[in-house]
Length: 455
Image (cartoon, rainbow, N blue to C red; front, side, top):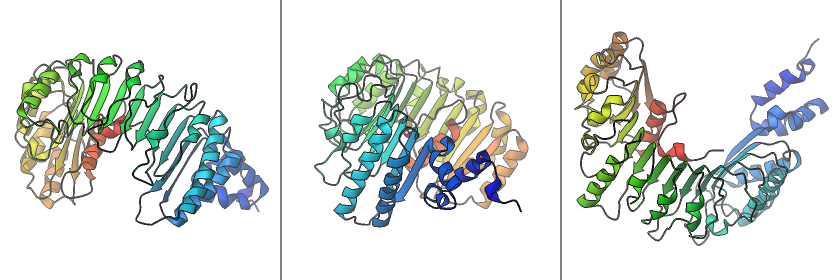
């Protein structure tokens, strides 16, 4: 009688690929010698590997055991590797961390030295030393976020790769830690994300100006001195999150996409806001603009008449109103809160005739005022193809009825509702809405998360 063991190797490999990683490499190989060989050598099963465990004693033990397997079977085979220990309230014995560090450094170093590893993501691995960096010869993407075991420990304090190491690195994400002027960054970088513990003393590395190929940059808590950005002539996409000042060189950069979140916390004055608006008015090449949190004290979009090239605009504020201006004429993707959108939805057909995607963040504690305008809106925008509502709770009966009426009025419009955590608007909720509206095929979501190089 035929059995599963009679299936061709290609079919078995497809089946094994659907299994959880640990079951695939710990349980399945015990069935027979053929399955053992397939699980530990088939390229389709080893090219891309990821394991996420809770940060508990059992989870750390699982990750340590996986590193033992990885050291034996990964070198020369694994191309993309992601390892993460999720934050938890469990306390971990230092000896377990030490065992994990020894096994992980050995396994990752072996995979990197083998030359096949192209993308590496390490998150939540407390106190992980950085000597494995010296073995990364062919790496192209690195996302490293290690939590400190002590307040005095910073992963960037050990970030000094030897010459020739990471010579082909193109995408780098580092967090958290203190930014130092002598931090070494590979000159080959095209995408960079730096996230640090808040300190007004943070300063960009002196070597930043040598990154002549850098086109995408994201900075979080980068301090007040951003003058080094002026030398990044190739920069096209910039995200600034919780920085203490506006970059004085903003008008000198040839940016296509700009995301700003809670900027100017130190100099939070009307003069600073006016300077920011003046700088934005000179950024005439912008096609994507995202403004989140306390960026301005007043409503600036109406004053951005010079930005006629905008294709994506997000006004990620819970309550601050949004007034449409000449900048809206070419906008194809628009994101705002339902409260901010209440005053302009009726004007969209005339002011934004090219609008193809609209995202609205709904606050369950406030009535959704534009309910009655949804059917006419969907019908009055011939280019509209996607309407997304971010909801912190289940949709009400009135909202469901309004959505059904809008769908009947415009059957070509795809209407989605996404559930976001919490009742009040959050950064994570805004990012989810931005990704849903702007992250479709051919469009890179211009939210903060999109700037992070993910392995």
